[in-house]
Amino acid sequence: ILNVEQSPQSLHVQEGDSTNFTCSFPSSNFYALHWYRWETAKSPEALFVMTLNGDEKKKGRISATLNTKEGYSYLYIKGSQPEDSATYLCAAPNTGFQKLVFGTGTRLLVSP
Amino acid sequence: EPEVTQTPSHQVTQMGQEVILRCVPISNHLYFYWYRQILGQKVEFLVSFYNNEISEKSEIFDDQFSVERPDGSNFTLKIRSTKLEDSAMYFCASIVGTGSSPLHFGNGTRLTVT
Image (cartoon, rainbow over all chains, first blue to last red; front, top):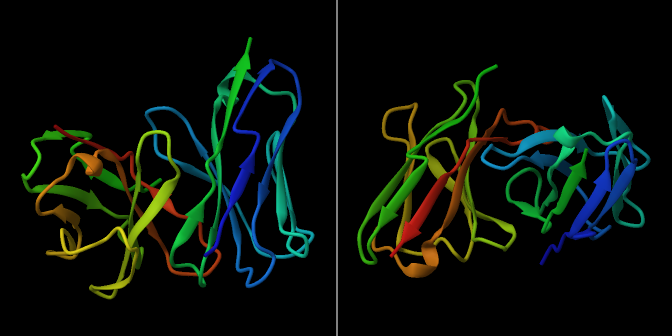
């Protein structure tokens, strides 16, 4: 059974701090790795879908890296802002792009 | 930007009652999904739907659950006889169809079973 783990569970940083979280997944039968940002009372919003080992993607102050051989992805936020406060979810499909298996999420709180 | 819409945003029902959660996926998307999150737990897959039939379902998706796409636009999840443990946030999602497409989620329906 595919198991996706995220750490830490929660994080509290000050505005301006840079931060990063980890997503771990089985390195065998890898298809893709998704990152989503989920703000309270909103729908989860896709940040990145990564498929290639060594992939690095960037969206504004947020970037992500992927290591499929060792089974992990890092999400980085540079210069955190209060509006970055959200739960960050990673997920991997068990077969192709059908069933996504989610991690528990990392809950980020950025204080002004 | 087109979005997935879900109604209602919150539904309260009594145990044993039937509920129907409704979703309108993005119009050119081909694959549709229901996920749910019980408070404090992981987001979990329920079912995927393609070409007017279920393509995969989880062990949670037992005979009490059914999905339909009755009119080519709406995508519904029915729970025939709700249990207390069905209380959760239910998300509808859709994708265009390529292997590396992200899911587009609706805002969710919070189902409370009393």
